[in-house]
Length: 103
Image (cartoon, rainbow, N blue to C red; front, top):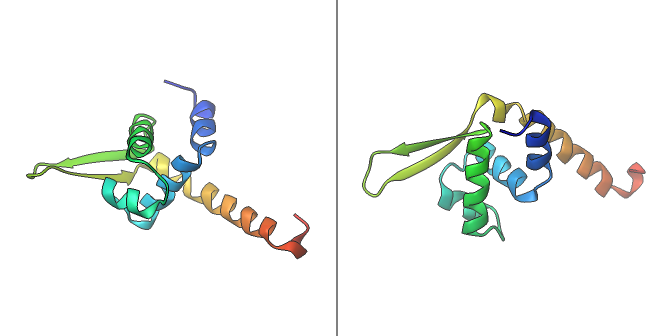
């Protein structure tokens, strides 16, 4: 298992991972919902990101015993701990977009 620093670097260094986390925070829980909510994200990359986030303990995967099977993802406590960091990244990006802010 990677160190916490390696996990954070991997998560924060991938735009798709950040977008998946944002979508799950907004309430998108199922793989199809996530893919529709994130333009340009392929099924292959989505599945890779979801597997990695589950392995890192950031997302929880729940399989419902239905036919056809239903899978939903949710943030774990470790994943919820990233929420303030993602909000701060968004605030900084907004400031950078404002020409009068000086960056």
